Image 1: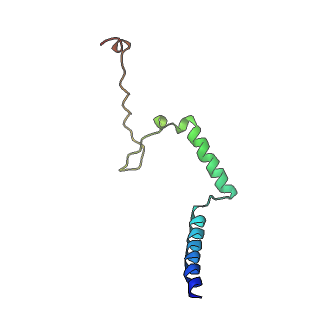
Image 2 (image 1 turned 90 degrees about the vertical axis):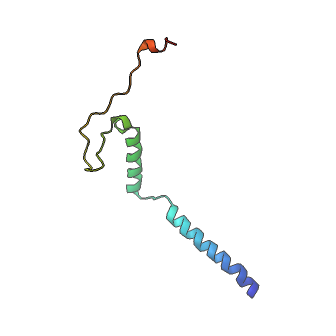
Image 3 (image 1 turned 90 degrees about the horizontal axis):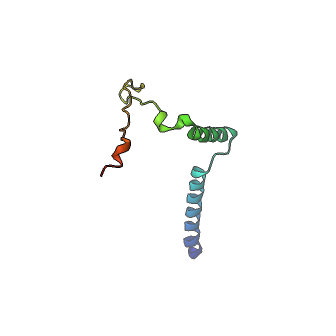
Length: 83
């Protein structure tokens, strides 16, 4: 009987831990979660989702920044030919 207890207790502990892990990490299956997932995917694919088009938010106030974004540096066409 004691040998069986030594085998049964770890098996039960592992089974409980596996059940808890599975329950915490399973994908939601409700209709609302499916709609939210689709909305996130469409938002990621949209041109407005491009990080270059997003407005900056001032971390201190949480409001959009009024400062214009700096323009990226431009290279002249002749810069490639020099050298």
